[in-house]
Length: 320
Ligand code: AVJ
Image 1 (cartoon, protein in one colour):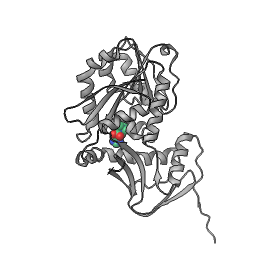
Image 2 (image 1 turned 135 degrees about the vertical axis):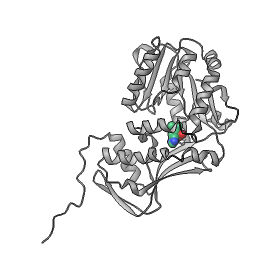
Image 3 (image 1 turned 90 degrees about the horizontal axis):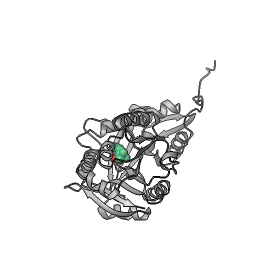
Image 4 (image 1 turned 180 degrees about the horizontal axis):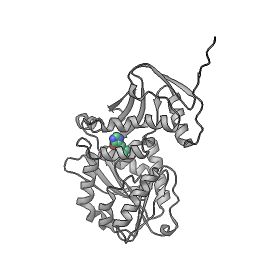
């Protein structure tokens, strides 16, 4: 007797985010598999990222927060009064209070793709700063942003901390800087954080911590694919890898298959050999002149730069 057998997983009813679905399926079909880093940030991923920022090995958040605290007064003096602050990829908005206290803007617009996370942090900030109009915008900051009505007339200060720009290859970061310039309008300024090139002995542990939080952050992407796209990825057959790519001046994160395996996502099947990886993140690092050149290419003139004593991280103020 011929046994009936399910050969293909039934396609999940596609109430999934179509952009997520497209990025995952296109990324897995490629010979060199890669999924854009922006998909790390579902609720669990955003929470894991917050834990990363507290890790002893992950210096960027601590150093940048220190710079904001130390130089908030100088930044405020150069930025002037009456601006609205627009933060790109605000996440938990953890660094924002330091900037709001120094600059005392009329309005604050956090933009983030993780809607739930965005609303929670915006509400907390609004309670702490009752004199500032807080107007969150849920969306992808890579696309031109329609800013809320009330703040359209105010001059803007874009705030793009955390070296988030480092997730983009050069061409995309130039595109983004130009899009930001357009979204922010005439007379805009931009305060951007950029992580510096430094030794592998510091860079690699920052992305491969002893407690395994970064590994959990990376692997969470596979759980998200399984959950939201009806995937059958054997997550325990993957391991987290962080490597310094010197030619491209970036730390890369990968998910490496520890054995030959196959799985399906939305009814399509994929096979991977042991050692093959899914490339999940680039985190580019910049020398002082690299950073300034990138900003100029994106249409911004650098006004000033602040760094810590060890030159780990830079905060750069530019104007349109
Ligand atoms: C949020 C993009 C700045 O690249 O350092 C941290 C993300 N990935 N650990 C970074 C991240 C792994 C982070 N950014």
